[in-house]
Length: 295
Image 1 (cartoon, rainbow, N blue to C red):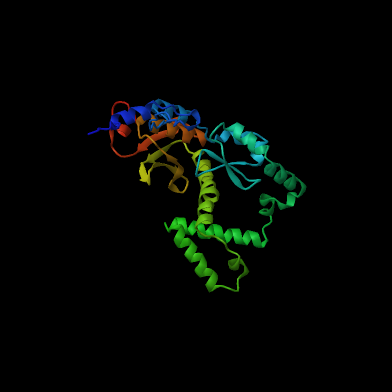
Image 2 (image 1 turned 60 degrees about the vertical axis):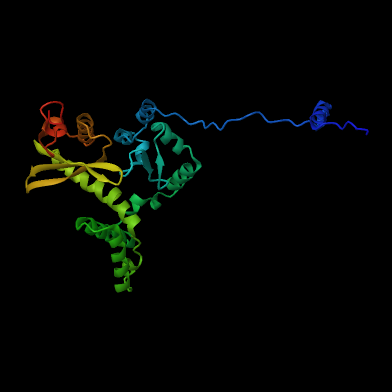
């Protein structure tokens, strides 16, 4: 019986593996890759460096004769400034005066400046000198309504609802018909119109007294810690008190609190040696014997 030798599977595999594969048909395997995530390393020291160079508004900029024509302080954010010529807020976070000069070079600001110089009668502060215009009546009504809202601790949403109700009750009044004072505008009037005027009035009275006291207490608003600086003093009509400034206090340490209180006094041209008493809660940070705001 004739036995035929069949190639085994192993021999067949060897023969196939030994065959030459053309280069154009060769399978190229991609290099082995690993899923590596490159993350930006942020250390506490780096974050402190970034915060250290954040520019904030300085009131001495307003003493510049050129800046004073258009520059105003933004009461809601110290890292921004207000341009009354362009009617906008812009950031001064990066370089302070450099950011202001950059805004001055923008086409919008230059066009608005040329327009204001060509038509001085159209400026807002020139219009307010006229006491008999409908615009003055409208501004007076809106300011009085916002003052009433803040005085009685109403919300800005409630203020907007009140304005809508008044407009429906007095449709024949041209002044009421033109009122546009919803919650956003009401907040701007309260923070940027009424508050600076009332603060200036209090500061003017403080300059005529020999001593005053300061009260403060931190409270949280969302994720921000706010500290109101309240002043109290004797006037010709009795005891008066008012808010000098509302500041955001990140760290409630003795050094930080003292630094901010001193800054508020100096910014309003008040002397620290006139401060005769301090009102606060009885924590060690405020009234401790060692390393406190009082000490």
